[in-house]
Image (cartoon, rainbow, N blue to C red; front, side):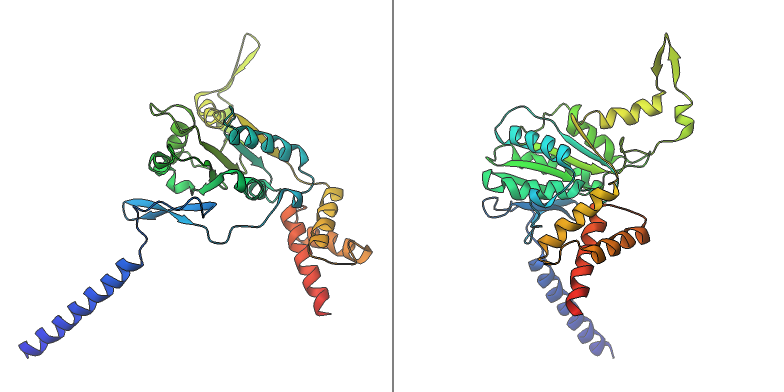
Length: 293
């Protein structure tokens, strides 16, 4: 009985060693940097106690011309990116406002627009912001220009990662690389939750409004972004114009005729939103459904 047990245990151990060897082979090397001449975008991924940059094999094909009714935001961010690519002074960017209005789409489109001029993108989840020093350190000597992209950024009151972001933006003893620009999108203007009781601490001193310490702490984070771009809900005319644009992109020959217009309005009403995302979703549904009929 003992010899049988030993044989089974030995076989199981050998099997586990074989599986571990195969698993280790499948893991990416944390030491090998991506080939930035080949890849235009990467994501930061955790690997045990460290992390690595995972290339994005199929990046989004959005172009600037696809984004409608956000011309002011598009022009301001495009100018800032061109300054960045030229090695001129520029600002970190916070794009904030209503959901589905083109904040993250604008970042993706700018990458496609300027990838041939050396623009690259690194996407970092907010939970990994504590790794920012490790992410940017290998970029100092690179010839490319990097957008450090944080999508849907927001923090809870006791979240430690927002302090790492503050240090990266302005406040650490270590200077950030000149070839790294931080772009963040958020539904919150100040990135942190705001409570009524905090505003009650505000005081008027000689006619000037002075916020309480809690509000000042939250404002200090968003103020570290030099360029703020606000995105607001679309009007009905804006929404329909975006629908028409997407129908054209999807090669729907009838365009925004009366039946499509009424269906688009009904679609937005059912979702309680007139946004670029809702317009895109309607156009996909409309063209696909009409194609079946």
